[in-house]
Length: 187
Length: 189
Image (tube, rainbow over all chains, first blue to last red; front, side):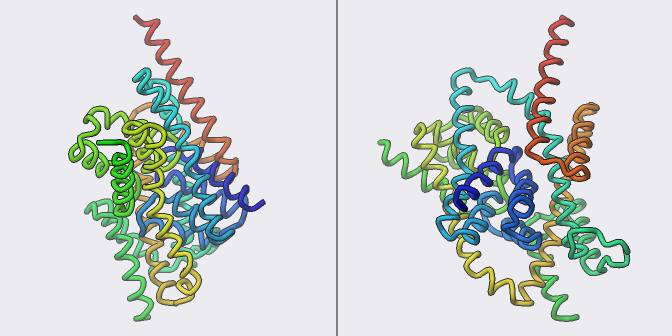
């Protein structure tokens, strides 16, 4: 049953993505491009890019996009619901406990173990995206000569601007999009 | 303010916040604070900090978690559901529209060029975020978090162990570490 599969996949994404935003990215890749093959790696890269350009959490964006493509509007609703249900239950439980005891000690403890793991996972998904961006392939080609010069330079400049000048990410993404179009027309 | 009006305000506030926030959870949180603490005065400053801490510590999207917490605090379980609906509907609508045009959209070479360019930008943003986060962990000057980070990376990226096994394992390590340190501190007294 496709609706159940969608619900269950996004339920797991909702349940295990701790630390917001980018933390959901590796889990989404795992579920939609590896476990189920609902999206190709290229489509996954597209959805991350679209999610960055539109408002709303990436997990919700991915759930709607995958759901609608795999099983129509109802699929989108089911996938989004799957994504949100774990949050609702857990946050309400924590909220209840908070107003009851006003203490977060053990939660903080668990979180301190999760934070480094989450970073490792974001790094892992980030590396796949970097490969897509620089080599246009998920695997690193054997010959380093396969690196295309244009995206490598663009990446270098974008990264330097982010790090040194603290330019806002939205501007960087818009800027690289425009430069990509200009480059396409001139060469 | 009667309850029905409260639900209306909750829904409309979260809907607007969600529709206008680009850039994810860390952007929506300060805007929520402005709306509910400064403008409406429904929640105290310090309480809001705790609500955000809970939203960030819980699994799921931070924006959704913060909405659940807010709604629950202001108007109970139904309030939480109203806030979640308000938060989720704008991205659902936008992405539905995008997905309808996605096929035609993707075939245009111009869009393809823009998307490849933007992907480079996104990769740069994520690299920047990851480096900042790694620096944050290293600044704690403790071996365990760094070891957990390296081990988790090796497990997921090289050994291809499922994240769904790695995440709870790291949570357990963190909980044990906290308990052990609390006990040691207790003995030291």
